Length: 172
Image 1 (cartoon, rainbow, N blue to C red):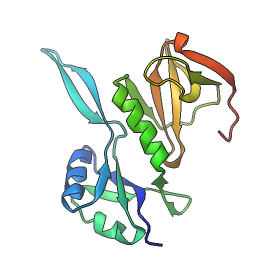
Image 2 (image 1 turned 90 degrees about the vertical axis):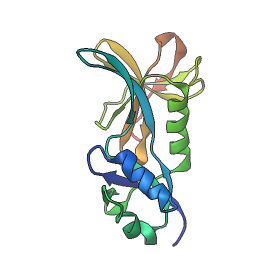
Image 3 (image 1 turned 180 degrees about the horizontal axis):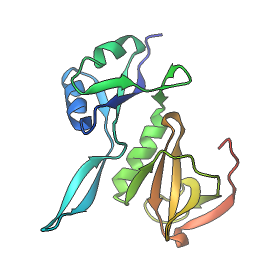
Image 4 (image 1 turned 180 degrees about the vertical axis):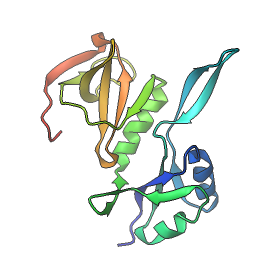
């Protein structure tokens, strides 16, 4: 039972980058999805990098080394769902990475969203991805679920690049 898996670590507020760096220094493989956004202050605008999922760092380790990982300053706990340590599959991390690498505007959303229209992206950087369309305010968003951490990625994609492929069923 000592296989390497991507575990989901919860960190202290605004400590994600420091925790990721400290875990890397201790020899762990870490993934911290970072997005760039333009912040507006009263006197200037600045591009800042921030973690996509506040408080989350993904650590590739074994179950037996979880306690050791928690000794890093800023680490709070490993996320549990239904009494089990939360893990995330490589394919889900690759999906997150692919979306971030395109440079499209991304938000994360941990809320439960009612099922909507299932779509496939037919053009642009995310072509061939499937997800669902939701409306948020006066914008349309494309929703990609990351089920193992109960998070969703909302990406603004022009409607012309989306093609309906039916209704979403609850188990998808």
